[in-house]
Length: 399
Ligand SMILES: Cc1ncc(COP(=O)(O)O)c(C=O)c1O
Image 1 (cartoon, protein in one colour):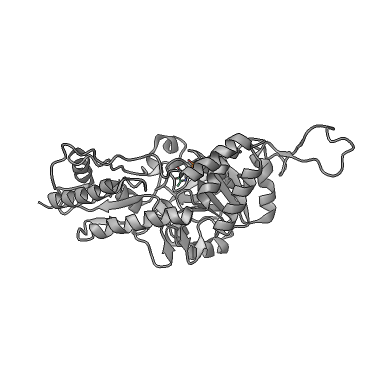
Image 2 (image 1 turned 120 degrees about the vertical axis):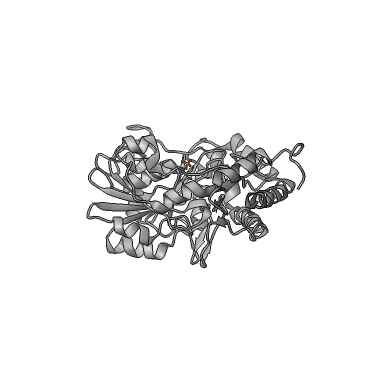
């Protein structure tokens, strides 16, 4: 491989998808004609399409996955005196909405091969105070849900699937977000599909809990019950609690964003297939370097490769992850990143009293992990270059 002098390298991108001309036309039409600009027909259509795609019963479009997680936390009834088990190897938003309720966060370790929690890592943490388990389907791979659901059932725990990174991921023929009591999805800029930069979806299994979601999403607003003599009296709409003293929020998403979501949900399989094909090409191209270990995708799972993380094991004690990243960055200008500082090491969680954990696999993976730039619109020549750069770097580090 030649020197890097004139090649532009491969930047990390904060954007996970692009809109086609016909997507943009549809979105612009929504800018022109939506009335109202929030909570209208585009939201209904997006929710219907999302429900059909994920094979869930109730779906509510919201302003972010963080909002969806907060609604799931509120609807689960968790609060002071309760414990919530979740991984520390995840983005902070998996945890913050649950901490906000006053519940105690209990950190579960990851499985070293799949990098997500398992029934084995959750089970020892269950106490009489445990109320909820948050399962994060990280990097596009679902956790092994059957044993987790069996464990949850035997201890009467609610399960929240944080599927922010896993729209379209599949486990034994079932969609991410369709197995637990709640599914939370993100349409943030970096995700496999985006609703113009921010957005989310909450899916709810229980019909009675689902009925509480629209009011919680929108300041407790609802239609008046029954016939009114004049449509304007006593006012345009009513406001009430869906559960006594459970104060609502405004977590609504706009119509133009929902229009963007409609364009994407109909082609999410196609978008994910491209990611899968690139991930497979990349992993195959470096498969003769066993010191680079990718996230394992067990049989019966379909990974949608939100990211392409790997573990660099080094070939001797003098070569570590930082040597790998330094050479990729300085010599080839490939901008790799490290994802997910264990949450218990952050000042926020430490100062809130959640700084303790027994998660050796999380700690080890943090020291070994790298994440390759993996936006699907990366030009083919850059993608090929990244393969060559990776191969050269791995060979170089063997010297
Ligand atoms: C695992 C995980 N959970 C939750 C979130 C929060 O999503 P949002 O940015 O839509 O609030 C993210 C996204 O960034 C995430 O990756």
